[in-house]
Image 1 (cartoon, rainbow, N blue to C red):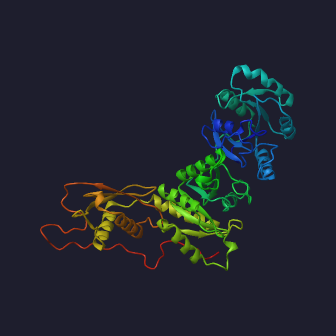
Image 2: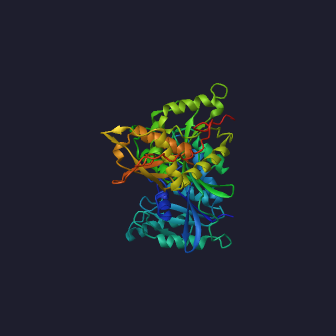
Image 3: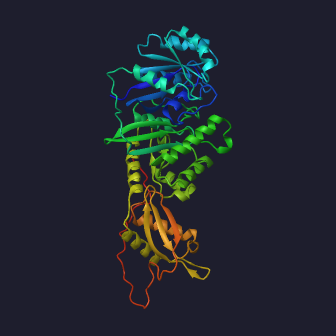
Length: 475
């Protein structure tokens, strides 16, 4: 049995998402005056006097969605009410009692669960008498709070604690996730369908309408007795076309989800060409050194007309700087190859977490120099004295040299390719820093003085015949 759930409900624009962020102690939901911003259920665990509950934000009741998603939003609200143990009915002190509040109250009457009436936006003590009219809704006491002014939080938490049925668990039945996945991509590439397939329930709204998802929604599920968090994000659009606050915050949360993820699943629509937005997103993933998988969704639409290898070659051509990124072909609607994507993501996380001993790393660097020496620049030969791995996630390799400026971008790319071929970082990004270290007698791969035969070290085994990436053909 999971921890108790507290659903936050009410008409649009009463401050439900502000209250949700306030209780959670961090900005999770998008807060904007535009009605109907919240569509999916957002969840966050909080602790109240040693007892844990999960708060759930919902969309506004009774609103007509501009994208004709009203029925989907209402279904998400119904699921939140069905799973809730306590309900926070939020009203707006400043605007007072309106007919839509009565409609919400009618929907909550007879639900058989504790309903706490919360008058939000009560920014000063002088506004408390205005909340008296809400007693007419028939839910007993009215608690006046202000998420914006941080008023009444302690009383609200205590009120929630007293309302939780005693027989429910008081400790969270959760553990730290072993893997965090960010699901990103353009609009309408099937990200929410993929998330629902993982969660095995309708956690996010699936629609042909572009931009359905706005918030970043965390979904916890278990695989091989390990907890994985999948982060569904809003569809990314060209920054030049971001015209509203909602679009801006959606994009900002998608980028934040990439930064906090262990592995990024970059979704593509099999029936559409790679766009400028896709390239921008791939560049952002690369800039943050995140392991990634190119997930080509809706592959069932193209079976028989295009081979996976052809599409893989196409992706490599338009995204050449990410030629090491694995490619997966799936049909999220049917669950085809979804579990294989999870297996591959776990493998990438393992690669990014690996550490290589200094001895092994220096042998690989020495062999790389023997095979191809740095070019001479300004009458100086670039030298690498030694190398070490300074960190993991992402793997960070530091090369101590006689001058970073002596190693051009082409040679640096060559070294990264050698590292990827000979070290356990085959499919993940590698950070490489070149540092100057003066007054050292020789570099790796150079013959010492006086001359004597150089010691030939064993060349690391190379996996012959293996491709630089993984393309699944079993669609």
